[in-house]
Length: 406
Ligand code: PMP
Image (cartoon, helix red, strand yellow):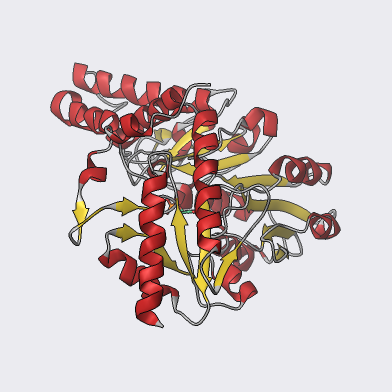
């Protein structure tokens, strides 16, 4: 098998050469935002240097070029997620926007007493919009519990399903724990009860290539910035039949067929959901980021990242008082941990002084922290451009921080 050429890959990421606090940067906050390769930056510079224009409206050449590139990006994203139709891909500003778009659309379709299931390991962006939806409609939010390993309890999920269940929402991968959820089983089971399923793919998309047709998922949402693309752009995949049924989320330009003060008719898909001038450059750059990741290959990425995960997990466990949260057999390259007696924030601050970027806190998943009865964790998340050497530096830094704090 071909060896993973990480040093060559690192050449694509200028930021990895910088120093932080006098130390070489070790960037282990990839689950929050991944870094951007120069291939994607080149596309951004090319856009603003050569064909920056508004799309869809203009007859002029630049507008045409921008429109073509934007629509080509949509098709790249469609192919990547294996959506049947390009207009099932809606550009959004990110995962949060995609979820809110769907939650808002369901306002008119739910009634009092209907039930919505979410998992116990959701990001706040996959909790709060549903709570707001419940407030608007009188529907009831129910929670699929998890166990101490950080895995959903499938039998409890089955028990919660009934004829009132209208929607099921969960993440493909937990951002705080890295658990890969058995979404195919969950989707199939929910469909037996006629419930629609939305999968938050924000944390899965950088590691796993989801096939929305094979999954038979109703909605799948992602953010570009977790996949080597820019911030402020993402997509919502929705099955055509659902997107046809949902009302538009925002009104404005681009999303209409005709407007008069008496009545407005909406444009077809995908434009119905794309009011206003979108992040044109961002969408095009998202397409380039997907090309970049596919060039390396998702199988190769997953294999290499898994090796990093195993290596780092074993090394961390050698440290006294180490507690790792979330040890599902299937997980992505995320490690959430605490050291007995120490506050995660203090560890994060001290390792930053040594050039190491990790996230500390509740990771926008307070219910998970409540479940484990902790204020937060230190989270190290690895990407395919990280190295074993960086993990060694990180382990040394954690050990030093521990010594300083005890
Ligand atoms: N869901 C999950 C699982 C996430 O990890 C994140 C980002 N931390 C989001 C949703 C929100 O993504 P964004 O901020 O890009 O909208």
